[in-house]
Image 1 (tube, rainbow over the protein chains, first blue to last red):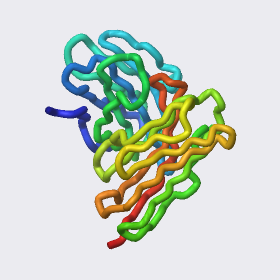
Image 2 (image 1 turned 30 degrees about the vertical axis):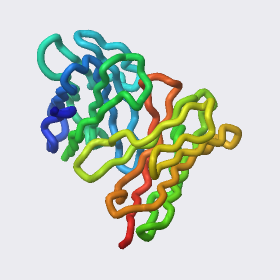
Image 3 (image 1 turned 135 degrees about the vertical axis):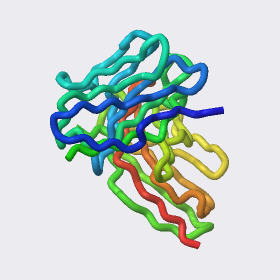
Image 4 (image 1 turned 90 degrees about the vertical axis):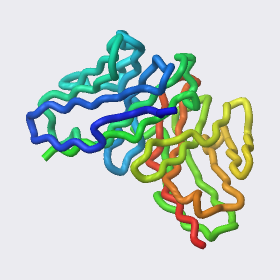
Length: 116
Length: 111
């Protein structure tokens, strides 16, 4: 009964490199959400995806960030040319349906990205 | 633009006593509120929620109170137990998937 899996758990990148964060939703879940938590702040919504579709990316920075959830495999959050301000914890959540209220979202343990 | 605020970063309480966590929000369009609990190295887990049509919801030792006019909600834990030591996040939504979280309150339950 695996929950939401995220890897890597910790990722260190130098400025200008690319970061790829992976999220495998709970079994049977086809809706994935990404949140970012900056130091001393709450989690902030970034993007909502279903298989092969981006439903809402209103929380994603306009440049350097992209997300996908392919037909097969995990959801990927990709950050190109990372900067120090990208250092944060990135959480993925999944849900069974897209009807949406938050208590249907199950969170993974997060990936802590550190940009040096 | 923090729309959900938890002004107390930490709370220490004795085992068996009541823990009261507070949360304020600014967006009057929010109509669904949740509390999450987070242990170190784990993701947030859902604890309890309340819809804006209610002012109280209870689940075992956990009760959430909502004061819409004051845009304020609180979580009461009675009695507090050592396993309750964690970070508690308040979150709000417009009854959809997009959650807005507070910065969290770290609760420490002392034996």
